Length: 511
Image 1 (cartoon, one colour):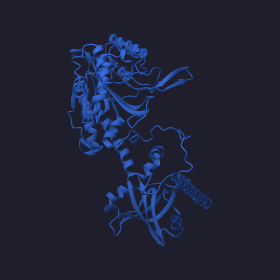
Image 2 (tube, one colour; image 1 turned 180 degrees about the horizontal axis):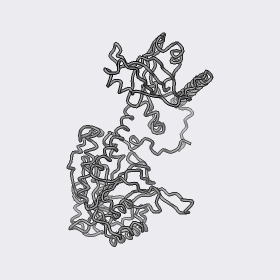
Image 3 (cartoon, helix red, strand yellow; image 1 turned 180 degrees about the vertical axis):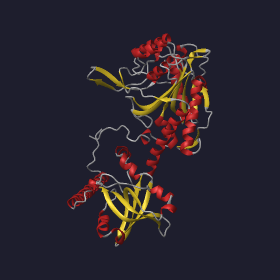
């Protein structure tokens, strides 16, 4: 369909406004560049400043005013507002800790610096030496004895009260978004605290943080589509890792009884508010443990991080209170399908019976229905009918063997495995197993996955012979857990999109 826009007056006005804004922006850039040129010609090039000896940040001055009010301090930061007229005025300087007001007077800083200060632009970086004091309105400030430009901003920042409104632009220009939006800065400060808390929790339990390869000759350890590259010297194709599982299990084989790796994984798949091709994952493995131990670790770890960031184990996410207080609810996949889809799979005996249910429920399957097993359909029924109901933290337990190739069979029921996934607000946040450590059965499972690939499942697991060799050396009973850090941060910061918790999310280039 072709759309004519030349007669649309609203679009013409919009385009005209955009053109005017661009012209004004370019004019401001030219003015700032001229100011820089004038400074350089006068021997005052701000980019010749190499270091600033700061004594305090903004928050430290506010917190320690009583002991600092007679002391000269040196601060540095970005100029975010300026009200200098006549022979005095105020400006706000922002650093990582927050903002502080600076009082600038002609008779304090001298005629030359006062004149220069009047030419400073919003966004410039300044160094201020002065003495803390409190204004008549009760605001802790710094009375400047000197103020100097230490870096020039050549592009104007967005207008203070509107900031970056275009969401795409916010992600593309995250640095500007961080400057203008305190809530965004707070989100990423919380992300830092959460990641620190996760490491702290595991370190306190005796886990060792190890590093596993990002480049691998096989994309193993998960059902996902990888990114591929080529190693020129070895002349082989390699893959960005989709999971760290197989390498970490080799560490368990080697005698590291508690290990974890937190870092980037890469999956060449769809993008949405829940998915980014590059994401942060933590996987941890503990010898002599099982999936029940992993449930306890998961709920305790999240509660610990939540408490560290919020001082409570409860948060409000998108208007709904989420209670991370252990213990979390536990429900089997069969029971969830019975509760939410109205189908009792304890009564379903054959693949044919399951296919009839799938047809009746109009399920969309990855494979042709004739190739689907009872396990495939049970999982699809949960995804269709059950996921959305798991709002409060819940462990969905006991997945079918066919869709859990790296997992031990459930004790007492060989159709299922000792696997769980954690759900919050209808979204998966973790995946865990009692790890399969029988190399003979593991090879059989991998061979079955090869058949799945032949049926069109290009995300089925591949055989990693190096991992198989390690498994034959001998791996003790082991529990393993993988957590999506980005999703965890989303819930603990009330963020609607995964892009809101990744500093620089994957974006399609503008050109």
